[in-house]
Image 1: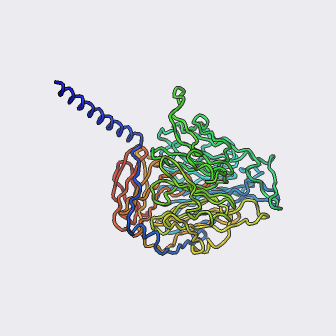
Image 2: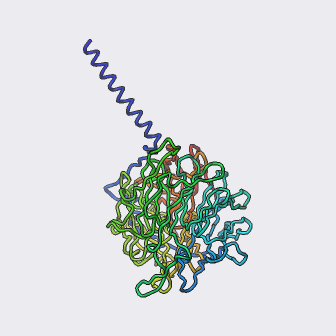
Image 3: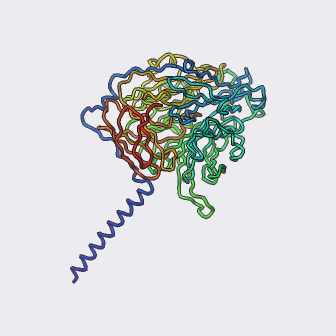
Length: 593
């Protein structure tokens, strides 16, 4: 009898432990904790993957086809000699948007206007422009036909379908009142800013559409910059030159979060959600999952202030209707300051896995003689400044970077970097115009290959916004760059790459972008990890599709998708084409239409 009781006790204990383990795995999967991705496999000998990083480079070739394609646009910054109004030097961005849903990416360009005049006065000839992609490398100006010509002093652009009607809407950040343009689905837009209750008047810059409160609709995060106006404008002297003052002369403005109420209106809720970072002077913003919980973090690039990294926590006041709160964890995770503990003047943002260790990294552009910064991601949401050892410091020290994107220009499976450069202190304070940069990723170490990338990279520009897209659907990434005082550049990627690719666009079950999710492309000797990102760069919106370089791998690839819902989907995709993958549905091949 005693033995029987002991057996029953052991059996009961085993069942209890087994049940606890099963319950843990179930809850973990519900909370997205099963999104942990194993680190890339390593090998003691050479393989196709490592060989691709050390193989002789395919020379990069980018051709400026803006004029030939029908894009004739120069950002108007209203620069007046010796006036030194700060908005004059901040520039404008661009948004790639398939506004008519014909399968070809169209281009929205943000413009300025006369600063001290009514932007809607008949004398204002400056407006934002929408260029419709006709295919075959041609665009036509569709601004008038689409009613998208906002006439304020504009900076940034965010693309998103906030009402889930299948047609992407446009949010434009301005010096003054921001603008929300609703896509009517018939090729036209309507300015609905007033009735949506997002008509605050601040100096706004980068902005993103993102589900901030996790209620399955798109909200708005808007970075605000400085409390600058005509009355408090100052002129500063630097090294004997008179020019524009930096952000230290002005008070920073808090960012704003507009929650989608689901009825066509929005409610500002930044403070209620805990988005209250100290000394905000926001210029760049990106949303993506950095800690593998399938919920996006929000990273903010601040000018001469510590950067912010907002992560979600359990609500501290559930009884007043709050669903959650955010906490700024940038300092404790190591991505608020430089590696030696200094604030930097941050502008552009890129999120990528630069060294194929499956941990997501952050790249930021900075001020002249500050260096750009690469934060290497580590387990448990930690970052370390690896700018020096990765080769970032030397090529960026004598540059002032703004827009930036990650792109695998030669499709060798390693993410390269492009940066738009140009100073802000004015023509009296050299250097002013600067050459842009293309940084080749050689297995986790970057090399400046700009001199070989074509005539555009051999000239000086006042670069500002940058947006990446495969605008001609030919399987490589092209670049749009906005400047001050010079026309925009549309850089077609003409690199003679023989490497293979696969293109992927995701759509969740409720027809939202899969921000917070990840795509893992499994190659024979490594896993390529791509976060689904909203925003990034500076003032701009990139192509929503992922274009993944595969190197010499020419067979079908196994792709694993970690959806924000917690669902994990695996599929085999043929190379050399784009695929549309909707959650829990088979992939659909997408042809160029």
